[in-house]
Length: 299
Image 1 (tube, rainbow, N blue to C red):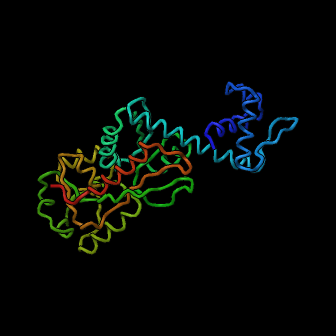
Image 2: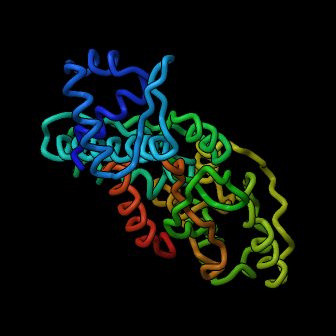
Image 3: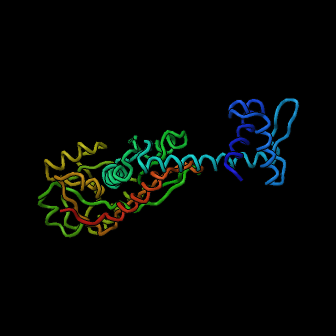
């Protein structure tokens, strides 16, 4: 079976006319008919039915139309990937990163991806998982990286990348955090806090209660990460933040006083049935490598 025969078959199927398909492809109707007859002969089933109102697909023709679209799209994407990898053309990847992903594994992975694909153009959106699902379903982004948890639309395919570890965070040299060996040493701390991801709030409270320390009652509540970091760097207040965010803030230190007990899954989301480029596939592998590198304390 030749790709050209599939292309000609799709041209007829989509236009509903041998005449229009031949004009679009710059062929004679005789050459087009010969190609389709060869395809039907090879498969051993009729694919098209001529009627006074035009050309209709048979049941097997409709089945082939769906598969032919997928095959030709994959071939087209592969040719584009080869051109990009060899530097013969540019390509674009639309990516969405949550705040947690953009501060750590996402940032590092994007840098590595651009080194691997020097002619790849990236468009990066920010936001949270519900927004990413809408963008994926609308075809506006190719891939999203965020913290997991909760149900995801069945049209979305989820790939596990690893776990993001959460630390008790303060400025470098914070006296309480420097001395602390466990959560029990944090009694009386002043906290700046925002909303924790789904599934993390309860383990945090349980660890504090088990250590004989009341659950956190923040003095400052904020959803602004830049504001929280600026307050942490200027005071002796504490917070609970993802390790990747602490790495990105040179003025902060972080301690894993929960001994790995506070984690959230990092996931990549793609639309099912969407054709993934080589760059998107490589990016997922790089993200998984970056997630595995996450360690413990940051002094």
